[in-house]
Image 1: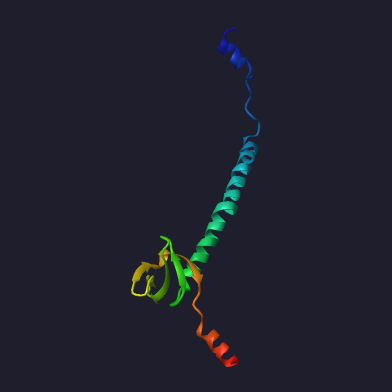
Image 2: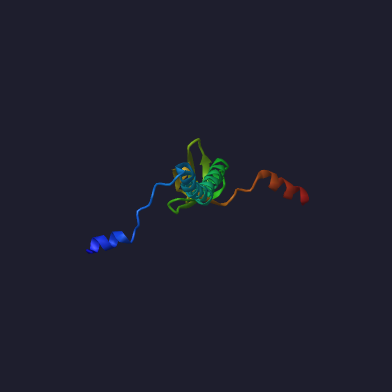
Length: 121
């Protein structure tokens, strides 16, 4: 026997399965399992993080200390529809897109908190 014939002799010929629909369903289950794993490990956490970011961007207000995606630290001087003006130094103000804000370091103190502390005095 030649090498090729001996190689093919390792794999006996198989007959066609009697029920092909059962094998189709059996091969579909692992595929659906992989899709479910991707959903719970990748897609769902990403959607949750995106909602948190949108909520943070919607709640930006004057006086918040923020960091941009470029690493610029500043205090929000003005909030517009699609942009935010940051005060990065005493005389320096830079306008950024709202989407450029990466995180809020410290939220501005609300005026209601100030009135409560004044009433306690």
